[in-house]
Image 1 (cartoon, rainbow, N blue to C red):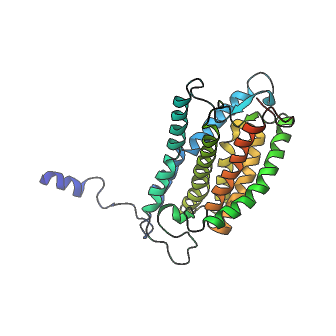
Image 2: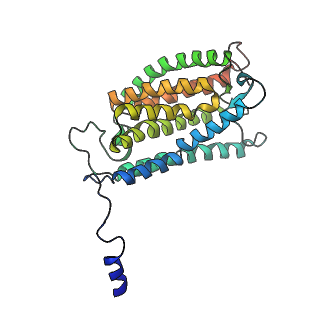
Image 3: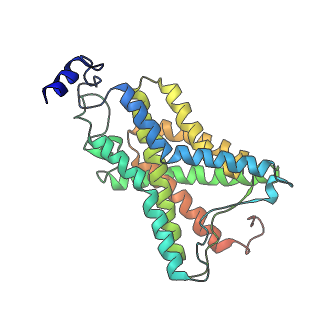
Length: 287
């Protein structure tokens, strides 16, 4: 027993102790840097790498990009609706696990310093994802969605017509009773994961790591564009622009809530609108 104590006292780690943190319960920069990389590796960072590989595959495949399809919300078991529903719900639920991890990591931090400008409350309340201002968040989100949704559709149609984008197929689910609810749930899941991680969490951590506001904005926006590369150049550029706008709005409002609402509304219109209009209007490309 005593020999073990001597090893502890005189071994290689003597006198180093734990890495100093921020004095408010926040870990030191080295720990925060590793934490950020791990969160991204479990979520949108991995999605960005997957999208890049998919994009390279599309570029090297015979034929143009617009003749290929990027399919979202497909069926896992087309001829077995209950099994398909189970897989859909499983996918939506497990995709939200990184958000729960972020909530846990933010909860570990100590109280905010007065005048810091950060959100209040534990966990996700620090980045303004809570129920303190539901109607304000929804109203702001609806205005943002109206502006970005229409311009985004025009950008997609133009990029596809120019050969820079794949044909995006937002859904290819069978016509079953749970189709629309699952599409809505998928849209909400997408919005929560992306805005909580790529805006609220990432900007907070990059700021704690000493990144400048411009560098953090660039990192967040480029990451958003990168995990949409599977759609083509148009998807990348459009989402980088959306990322810049969302970072600016987050810094102005100090809340992720309106961004989640805006993103959810954009995706709900895209998913459900495609389900209702595909094959019925001439201007909407189908895969």
